[in-house]
Amino acid sequence: MQTTLHTKLHVAIIMDGNGRWAEERGLPRPDGHQVGADAVRAIVRAAVEHRVSALSLYAFSSYNWQRPPAEVAGLMGLLRHFLLVEVPWLRDFGVRITVLGRRDRLPIGLAKAIGHAEASTRDGRRLHLRIAIDYSARDAILAAAADHLTADELSGRLDTEDVDLMIRTGGDQRLSDFLLWESAYAEFYFTRVKWPDFGPDDFAAALADYHRRTRSFGGVVEAGAAAAPH
Ligand code: IPE
Ligand code: IPE
Ligand code: MG
Image (tube, rainbow, N blue to C red):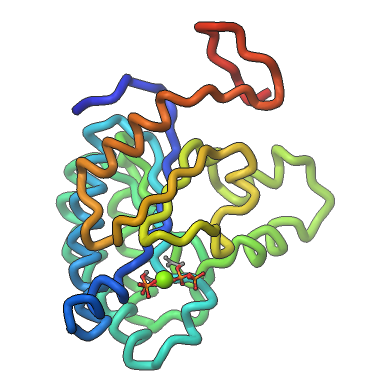
């Protein structure tokens, strides 16, 4: 299924439910993260096919440091491995990778893999893949708002377009401090499907749902007319 071609569409995903997916199967939680990494690969491809212009993925929040050290270490290793292994095809696919969040608390190997991924994909024009690692939207806003700024300048410092569609898998209905500023007018899509099971068909269903919605941005939308945010 191919959705309508839009010039700009920013989709954000809170990839939740890995741990419960594993526990349901009597597996250790890290197995859920491992299968979750495979799901990321498939969804990035689907995003390119659906002409999504930006895809923001919440991979590790600043609150996730509170998890058991072994789980944290596993996640850090998985992220590093993902970046190292996936970068060649992502680059060839025209994907530009940038990573949001703090870098100073990450293991050096992961920080290096991020630098390498960003440098070698910087010319990608088909999809901007933004991966949030050690990310807190409140921290990002505080860091960006240190000086007196206009709203546009703040958006510029946060280095992002507004989110059009915010998806959360795993059944919970909250933002967990992801992209607060950028989601001011986002459409929300919550699904009970846990991230490791979230496939291209689920992604297409979320986009189709989004395209059926009317976005009035506080105005009044005439039948058949599209609203614009400003
Ligand atoms: C999301 O899955 C992945 C990360 C937060 C890193 P969880 O690990 O939060 O899975 P649940 O919510 O415990 O099922
Ligand atoms: C949000 O999931 C963060 C990521 C998906 C990376 P969590 O599982 O950490 O969020 P809470 O604790 O349910 O809010
Ligand atoms: Mg969770």
